[in-house]
Image (cartoon, rainbow over all chains, first blue to last red):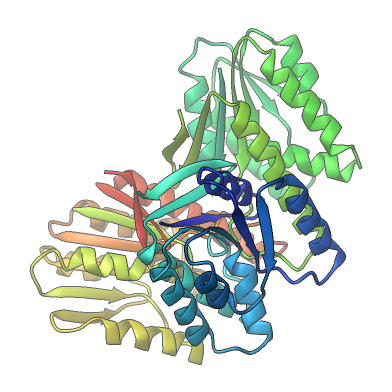
Length: 166
Length: 166
Length: 166
């Protein structure tokens, strides 16, 4: 079962997704895409880790999500989150289409339960900054592809779920 | 009854909330959190005031919302809006957690009908600016807490309600 | 039938709207409001044009939408999009209220099927930039008016429709 969870910054999307994964039997794999680059990010990661308790196994992988998904094909996985992963791909000058195709293809052959979290970034004013616009475009394309293959698609607003595709 | 109304900038959220309050018998208290700092804000306030008519009493309070709510415990109140209040708390270097706890606690012991308006700010690109990111974080935390205690939670999009929690 | 389709940047709103128009018999008029100003815009237009195939007639009009709508009163039209149109009105220093009134009035006397696409821009952080704030305000006012006269109003999120007014 593929469940795509989209929400704004600090919308409670990660917490919602954690609770969704924990509806399945442990162990649960937390697939963290974040690179711990600065103090702000460190703090954020620490808060999230502290909240998750027993039964969680954390795997940190900033690029090659498909491999982790393929080798844990029957487990319950939480991928947190796609926008940080996309940031990593852009910073490392990876081929976005190739990498996202590999990821999406791993999802379609997956036999466990996987919840994928991402950040809505496209509902504000279009930024001056060309790189930010590129990021919005790539995130939008990826989100559309994710929602298309997901069995369930939920938007999280202020911690509350809004089911868009059930 | 606590009704939380969230919407983007210029989404029609204040007008929607006014109409919701006016379903209850007058008088209605308009609890304005805005500080009238510049011409743009003055104009906005004037437009809102002109729209509200007979039956409305305006109370301006930019920090201590809990006191106003506690002393009007049985009335119908419209709080407009939380994001401006949060801006005031940040500008005055208040302890955000303490102040929001006081506010949320006043809400839970309130016996009238209260509609609380706030601005969705987290669905655009994450800004460069650390203060803007702090604001998005604090607004997100407050919105999650608000939605959790609200009996009803509505998102307003282009003037139309989207009920998320009923 | 007036159908208003709102979505963030790269949310799949144009593609969704195209499919909606194509539920009606051809020919379909694509009313493009974009001015082809730079390379980025040129590419975007080329991608959209390539996607649309047989049965589509493209009309480019960056200001006077009402005339095109009035002279094609019984056809199926896709207007893509209102935020680019608003940008043109602002750049040409047009009277926004007059122009949008003319447009809305053409819609209310229209006898065909018209799908109108626009960009949600108000759910991010409020920008520093006064012009961006003015744009958000004008877009918000226009979107509220559009949703009010539309028979159907759909938000598109990651390519999926969320019906707000049916």
